[in-house]
Image (cartoon, rainbow, N blue to C red; front, side, top):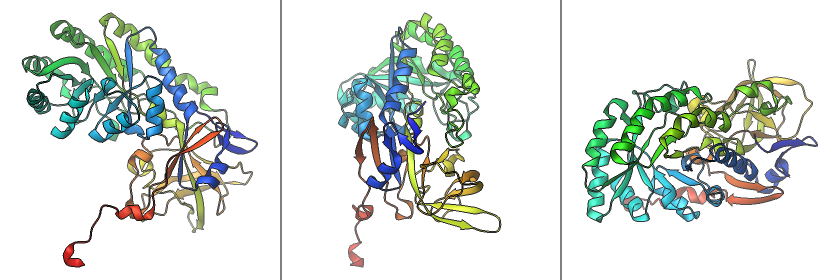
Amino acid sequence: MHYFRFVGGQLCCEGVSLAHIARRFGTPLYVYSQATIVNHFQKLQTAFNGTDHLICYAVKANSNLSILRLLASLGSGFDVVSMGELCQVLEAGGDANKCVFAGVGKSSEEILFALKRGIYCFNVESEPELERINKLARKMRRMAPVAIRINPNVDPHTHAKITTGTSENKFGIPFEQAEEIYKRASRMPNILLRGVHMHIGSQICSVDPFEAAVRKMIPLVAYLKKEYQIDFFSLGGGIGIVYDSALASGQPQWWEREEAKKILTPQTYAQRLLPLLKPLQMRIILEPGRFIVGNAGVLLTKVEYVKRTPSKTFVVVDAAMSDLIRPALYDAYHEIVPVRKKRARMIKVDVVGPVCETSDTFCRDRKLPRLVEGDLLAIMSAGAYGFAMASNYNSRPLPAEVLVNGQRVALVRARQRVEELWAGEAIAPWLK
C-alpha cells in the first residue's frame, strides 16, 4: 500500500497536497512518503518475527541519506554494491557490521575499505574475487567474512534485464560447483566462511520461484552449515510491487480489490518459506529494495505543451528519461495521475519528455483526461530506481527530492544548479 490519496480532489502525500509541494519546490520533483517506507519495512519485519533474521535494505534502489537514516533508525542493515554506497550508509548513521557487500566487480580499494570499516560480510560472486579478498585480508592481517553467492538456476519469470538467478546471468557461482568452491575457500587462511547467499532476480510477483530456489538450496545449505559452521542463509531480495494501483481511474486501490489476493505479500512470502527455513536453525538475511521504497515515491512533473498530430496526441512534460529511465530502459509501466482530479473527457495520449530521444516516453496510448499546459502529473511508484538511476543527459540538472512525514515536508536533496554540471571539468591548457 502507499499513502498517496485524493483529498477534496487534490492528490496528497500523507497530509500534504502535491500541488502545494510542487509550487514550493518546483518540478521535476521526487516526493517520498515516510509512512509508506516505515509500513513496508515493518510488514516484512513482522512477517519474520520469531526467526533470527536481518533485513538489509538494498541501497541501490534509493540512496537518499534521509531514507537511509530512517531505515537505520528502524534497525535495518544494508546491502551495498559499491564503496560509495557504503560511505553513504555510514554517513547516514548505519552500521558497517550490519552491511553485506555484493556486486560482481569489487575493486581492491573497495574491499580494503570495507574490511577496515568492519563489514558484516562480502557476498562473493566468483573464485577470482575470493582469491583477491583472501590476498588483501592477509596483507591487513585480518579475517575476511564471506558468503558465496550460489546461482540456483531458477527462472523467476521476470523481465530479462532484471533476472539474476539463471545460468545465463553474470551473477554467482553455478550450483553444481558450490561444494567445491566452499572446500577451496575453507583452505584460504584469511577467509571466514560466514554464510551462503542467493538472489534470483527483481520484481518477482509470485512466491513460487522463491520456494523453488529455497527448496533446491536447502540440502546444500544444511551441508555447508555442518561442514563449515556457517551462520546464515541469505535469500536476497526481489519481492515485487504493484505498479498499477488504479488510483488514476478512481477504482478501488489494489489492496481493496479482489485481485489483491494474488499479490505477493510479506505474509505469503514468509508463510511459504519459513517452514522450509526454520529446520536449518540459521539466521535468515533478506535484501529488499524496491519493496521498501518503490511505492513510497512519485515523480512530479508539469505539462509544458500538448502537441496534436493526425495520428497522436503528445503530452510533453518537464520530466525526462534522464530523471526516470525505467520506461525507456525496461518498457516499464508507471501509473500516471493528474494531481488535480479532472472531469474532462478521457483521450489516448503519449506522455513524453523533452530529451532528444524517441525512447524519452513515459507511456504510449494511455487514456488520461484532456490535459492543458501547466497541469501537474504524478508518475507513481517511482521511489525505487528513479533518482538512483538519474543522469545529466542533455545537460539536464538532477531533480530535487522531498520527504513527507505527516504534514511536515523537508527538502532532502536540493535541485542541482546548472553550474554544477561542469564542476570538476577543466579546459585543456592548449585550448585556453
